[in-house]
Length: 80
Length: 325
Image (cartoon, rainbow over all chains, first blue to last red; front, side):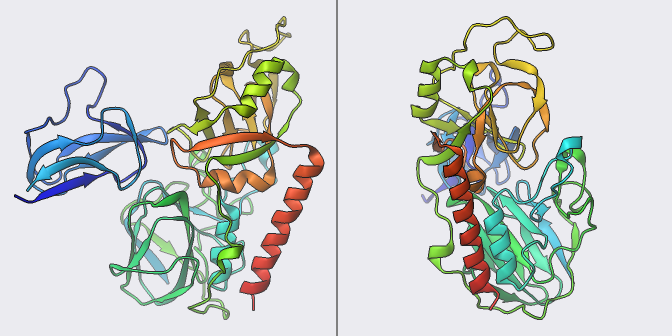
């Protein structure tokens, strides 16, 4: 099966959940639809949703929760 | 002539070279954070360097041109594409009605500047077209761009021409870690000798909160203060002072933990001590710092700061000389 990485649209801090005590948006093995939220990027005092850009299954998260990320950096890998 | 905003990017705003003259009554300078890049983009399309363009931060917008014109993009590397095909930066190019400008992921730097022949023709407010979003002043309706906005463009100057380019040597390059030269200030005596030394020797990192109001840094050791009895009117935190004016470029360190360099949309006064001010020649460099990028503060004296300003002005004159031909 083909794989595809979801890339960070922005530099900032990556979060896998909407608040510290919330469940992760998605876990490894979860099925995602195009447009679904897989995490947040915090930059300039606001949070921006990261969306899956294809239907697929999450194989792995490449970036950790609260990890500093650069724009264009892979956050997660999907099988599509 | 107009531009239609198909998607706005993260925080794209109309900016020119700023709104000086009102800071004493609380209206900040605003304008492009990387002024040299904005001025160069304007000159590339045949505008006066003070014309209004767009400041793009971290993530580019998608824009549709409604009539033919000439466009140039400078500043940080957010690679532009015209109708999906990559186009040159620091070089003017022609656009036709219906052409769509979009951007790839940010590669280097943080802010790109888009100039269009004729400039963005929003109303002049207090002498400038710059957007001050906190005050909902200037720019396009006092705010960042939104999907569906239509931006009016002024009449095309006779000097507008595609294919004008700015030599690599005349584009300012930043180093990593960024070296921000600063002039220690009035309140330097408030920090201990050891704290003053490690403020300058530690490598700081840009905090994700950094924005047009102020650039926040973290990661250096906390600042220790000289003991004192707080003067009447100052708060009890050792970083508090009796309220004072905050210069553009001033570096405050609330509670001694995270230095903040005030930038184009800064507040004009308050009650935090300032360890000094980043020199005017290095303010543009801050505009191109991404979150988590390393930076160091380097203390200089006034003659050095003035010499650096002279060099910056000479560089601007050289850009003007080659682009106004």
